[in-house]
Length: 305
Image (cartoon, rainbow, N blue to C red):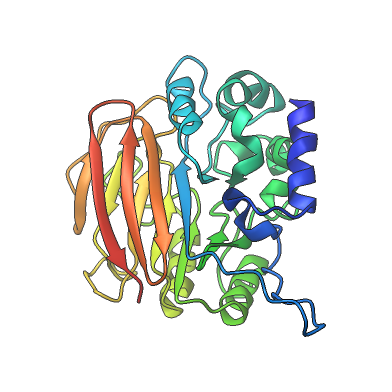
């Protein structure tokens, strides 16, 4: 595990042309501008597509994490780990015993956010110890990077996100500074869900959604509910809207699974399943496929605002 962590840190600090390293930029900082300033060298071509693979609720010993890791073995792309990555308390031992033997071999291409179980260890310290610079600035849990033509924003639903909070101010600056045609955001606890956890008990998911909606963000990915669910585009009050955000829940990385409850408004599909959400991000559009460890599949496409 120690060697993998060192290799991961080297990836973050160095540049890379591989797709899953998002153009070589650190996920903790804006994408650097192209060009050398000398006027003689052409800018490197801008990637016209990227692939992301997303799931949360992963490293619970004795359940499905090894099965979903086997899916990752054959799928290329940047991995968005959607929180609750090591059960039950997000300790160093949980990461060592339950996450690392399965998903650890994909550490270098993983961009994680913390969940509520990470914070059962004070300050989510073991989460930051394990992922190092791949998790952005230590103690924050929010950062941004580019994947092809898309901007990807990692957020933290476990710390304040209301007006005046450090996260809210950072998010607004990020959205104002790095304007792109298409943007995806991800964090752990969903605003909308048909799962047994129900609506969030505090305001962070709603605060994050409100700011993202203001800037026309296209897609939100969450975990927390140990199931898969897809919603139609909607506004922050749950009203269907072509200009709204499409939300996916993919708490399907390997922890004990949940049975979905009655569908909430705008819920289009739900499943109790293990797997990863694969999205292909292109200019002004996206395609998704939920790749499961069973015969279940969910596919579709959308366009950016």
